[in-house]
Amino acid sequence: MEDKEIVELYWQRDQEAIAQSQRKYHPYLTKIAYNILNDAQDSQEVVNDTYFKAWQSMPPQRPSKLSLYLGRLTRHGAIDVYRHHASQKRQGDAYSLCLEELEECCGTQHEPQQVLDGQLLAQAISQFLRTLKPQARAMFLGRYYYFDSLKEVARYCSVSESKAKSTLYRVRKNLHEYLKQEGFDL
Amino acid sequence: MSGEQILDALERVDEELLYEVQCMRQRRKKSRWPLVSLAACLCLVIAGIIVAQPWKNQEQVNGSSGAEKPNQVETEIENGSAGVYVPPLDMDVGAEAAVEADMLSFFIHQGRIYVECGQTQNGAGLVGEKLGTADGSIDEWTPESGYVEGSGTAWGDFYTVNGYDPTHLLCMTREDGTVVLYWNNNDITVQTGGDVLENVFHLSGQVTGATMQGPTMEEGTTISSLNDLNDWVEKLCAAPAQWDGDTAPQVQGYLYLENQDGVTVQLALCEGGKVGIDGLGDVSFQLDWTPIAQWKT
Image (cartoon, rainbow over all chains, first blue to last red; front, side):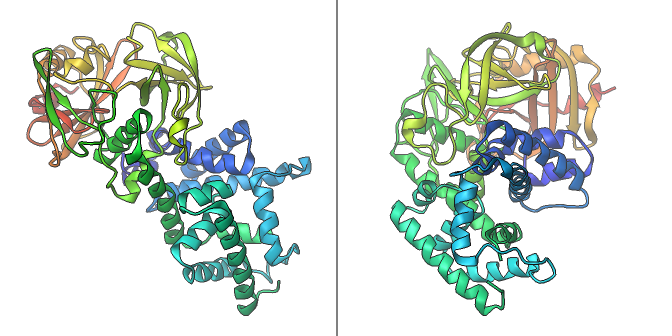
């Protein structure tokens, strides 16, 4: 079933919408959640919660790309769960590794919300990403949006792991400079 | 600023950038597939299934590599009867279709790929003997060597379906009791509608419930004249399979047939009096479906 038809089912409050979403996107969403949580049961719960959130949010939402919409809900939910479990001090998972890498370039201090507006930051990052070549952009978003491993990133970007690692290092450095220029306090 | 704030901000990054990356993650997989062997070829079939029509799948006769004839469909003579043969497709497909290919739920058992084809809420009686466990290990990055027995995008224990041939149909269960059916729809030759409706799903003369959605009928319209409908299904079982090729007919409605076991099959009702079966790709059957609208409640 096409995305548009599934979204229409959500709007019609037809529970078949959830069944069709599961059928089409369950493995994809599970991969996103599992990349972050590294736990099958937690991932399953997050993905199930994604369908519930989708049901609650459509309407009024009418996403043009359902995969991205559900993926974003899943990513958000998985990060929330991860942070709830932070006290367990999980080490060496994809989320922790990505966080460490990013904090090399942006520090570790939390800014008050009014100072660091998330929307402005997102716009700045989008602008920065547009300055990159598609391959570098794919590496960055693959690593830090989808939490793919370096090995996976290298594979779908057709480069060696060392090349991916060095490219990501340069991108992070450049992001640091870009955000400074844009007035963000790093 | 913290790394967490960056990670949070990425959630709001422009959708088109995310989509670009999503497609790149998929395309890289495609480029590996033409190199392959049995397992990856079967994956090509699955990708092709989605590419062709979301509501229906393709058929493939042999389990060996068919990559030498991409995008070409032939009629094969087997045991003296014609059947539709759809070899593995090449992967010159749109990025969005490739993304969808990864989202198909399937697993491998005894060298066959079983693809999810339906669910039933009241199917506890269908669940038979446990045959194995799918590990859910296949994703878009899985190398050829990863397509092994018990692997798949689906995970969990899988079982025979009571009363059904396990070479055609297996099932999994969910915590809420839903039974998910998986059809080995990529290793069959389709000669008539009965090859699927009777041999796989036991629907010939056994339809106990049906709903329809059509040009003038809302989804869920009940078909009450089951005798007439069963006669029509018998004719569909006798109808020879034909390949629609690159000119797939436009779908004008859907018919959902249920048998006494709760197994449901979705038919696509197409222009020109053609009928497709969900899970059967660009294969259709010539049979006038317009009388069905007269058999509603």
